[in-house]
Length: 131
Image (tube, rainbow, N blue to C red; front, side):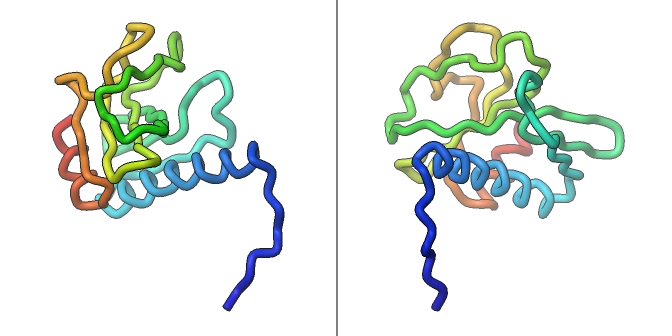
C-alpha cells in the first residue's frame, strides 16, 4: 500500500483541494459529452474551465465554501470578468450550487436562481441541464 511521505504546506494543500473540485466538475461534464478546456492560468480572467458544445462556449468558475449552511452569503470575486457560471461546493457537506454569474457584491448561496445539487455526478448533471 502506498504511503504518502510528503509534508505539504497549508497554502499548497488548499490549492490541491481547490483543483480537485475543478477536476471533478471537468470529469462530470466530459462524461456528459461536453468539450472541456482548461486554461493554463486563470489569474485575471477568473476562468477555471471553459466548456463547449458544437456552437457555444461557457466560462465557469469553481468555488468552495467552508459551511454546511446553504443560506450563507457568497462574495462576488469575479467582478468585471466575463464568466457565465459559478459552481460552488460545500467542503463540509455533500451539496453544491450552480449559479449564473451575478453582478451584486454579495448574494445568498441558496438564492432562487441558484440550483442546488447533491455532490454526485448524476445529481450534478441533472442540475446542470437546468441552467
